[in-house]
Amino acid sequence: MRVHPDIFRDESVRRKQNALLKKLNNRLEQKDFRDYIKNGAFEVDRTIAMAGRQQDEKTSSNCGSNSKSDYHQYYVVNMKGDILERFMEWSSVDTVLLSMVDALRTVGLPESKIPFLDEPSWRELGGDKSSGPSYSKFEINKSFNRVSNEGKNLSVFLNTSDFKLAKQQRERRIHAANAARSLKKTYQFEAIDGSRIHWSSENLIKVFNSFERLYNEHRSKFNVDSFYPLRLILTEGKTGFCMYAAEILINPASTPLMWLRTLTQIHQYQIDEVKVKRQQLSLFIETIQKFIPVSLRKGPSCSAQEFYDFVRQLSSEFEENKNLNFFNYKDKTPMWSTTLYVSVEARGSYRRGHVSINGSILVGADATVRNIIFICNRLKDDALRLKEEEDSTIRKCRDKMNSIQSKYNLLYIRRQHRSGVSWSQVLICLERLDQYYFEELIGTSLRIGPSGQFCAFANDGSILVPWNFISE
Image 1 (cartoon, rainbow, N blue to C red):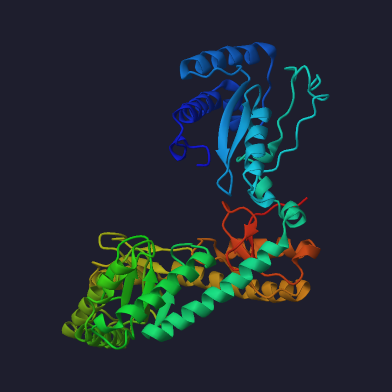
Image 2 (tube, one colour):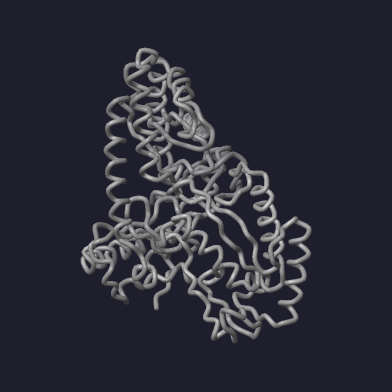
């Protein structure tokens, strides 16, 4: 974005920036770049290099650039807003990437956020700097290779990272938590959830402060004195008030007046109805559990209204059909005695039922009493077995967490929230952490993330580690 033509006013500069982007796009489509992306290593000979040069010269002439084929003059805006002149070299993949890294350093981006690539030795490439590199065979530095596992190397991350950043992140998270508690007390929300948008703590503080100013300026426009038991949810999706979930959904990127419009649409009778529906939901679930030993939960694909309607309908069917053959003939007991965990998903899904990896039985929100009885009776053995395995894995993880926490004097070690990483993957990560000794981990905190995550500092200052990390 710091080289985008739209941020410059001079028309000649805009033409140069346009030419840069077009030429860079064509350069990325050439064979050496494609081989690099595909294989992680490539070979460049003089024939390919000369073909690339001819293509560059053709592209440069088409774009209106007057620079040499191997270099392109362009401009970049640094953090202070100053416009700096730079040159992009096109001869090889290494030189193109080095030119990008040099530009990132020039604009003032922290070293920890720049992919590190050592400057290639001209001696190793078969030439000197004055004559330029020769095009003999060489291996590319894999620090730019997205296919490789370099980003998962915990040893490299710990040895090259600035832990002052983690301390700053931890302090900002504490300030954000204090601001959230103050906001919760001001509006009397039951809870505030800002984890769905993955914003930084610094930006969350600004949002919470804006809510505080909104209350001080427009409190007389609210139709309620207290928003309890509603929860404030910061989301980037649909906004509004959900009576069944007792949630106020607000987009933090919207204007405060748009927040005010949502908050002023809530009246006291709606809050009273939320309390009534919450009590009814508990009664419906208790009624169902009198007939069959299940623990009902709302799945991620099921809306709060769908879950409420499902539980109400199921409870009504049980009450109306007390004498039907839902039980064994002899002793009138359910067909199973151990409590089964049932996750209710969206309508139309899991018509025949399905057992998840954690032992929950997945059913659709349009399932009837007969469907529930049939599905639970058919899948109960697999569900109980997987649930027992899951509980055993969780106990092992807890023991390992306590052991590693004592070993490194960690503040805490947790599974990353809403990441999809399973407890079995967490256990593998913990066992591997116990095999090594990382002195840099002492006194820090850990979060275990999914496979696609690279080692990084989380917003709360903890060290985020992929469960399948590598170590030298």
